[in-house]
Length: 236
Image (cartoon, rainbow, N blue to C red; front, top):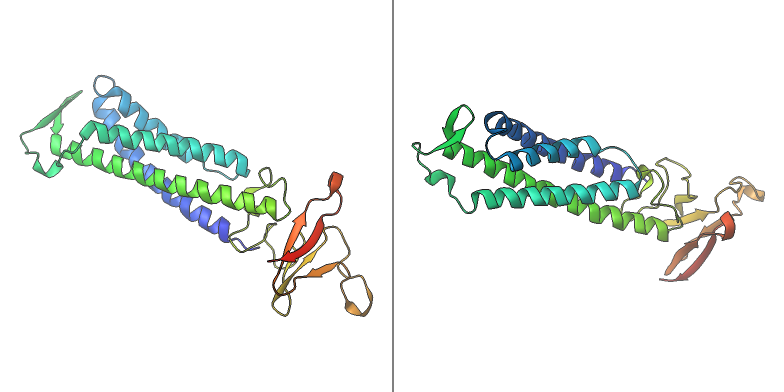
């Protein structure tokens, strides 16, 4: 396999962290001018969610990451809905300069405050959409890894998840951790039983190789009690 999934994951997380940082900055400003006397609930909530988001996005196992991604998606969804309820369908541009919002130390422009809340709302929806999409991809890829002979894919390092059209295993140019070898010959992939000698056999042949025939699909099933996997060819 390649590191396509790892690269896409990093790109998605960097985007989410950037959006979260913007929300955290605006929320910190709200906390400075409002807490503890005004709109304390939503201001505190908008500080907690992006902070938690930045802290938990680290390398982990798929099962742990799926749990946290789900929790973060729910939190961002809640925050987007809360800010939408706060401003409703208010047209910020229609607010005049004479309208002011009360703060701890006086007032601020209601129009400026409206625009800032709209930014928080929009970025909350964007983070929710990104996290929800990533969660679907994560569950799909982990399920594929289990089908391809990795029954403990949910517990393995997340970097070993393959992208669509790839096979699971730690990224590398030669043999991968599941024994899959790309370009086994004539454009067909080959599958090697894990733990077996790749260089054995006479005439330079590799005796423990299953070559995928045209119109067939390879089915890999885990062996009993940790034994060798069962590799079968079936009509596609």
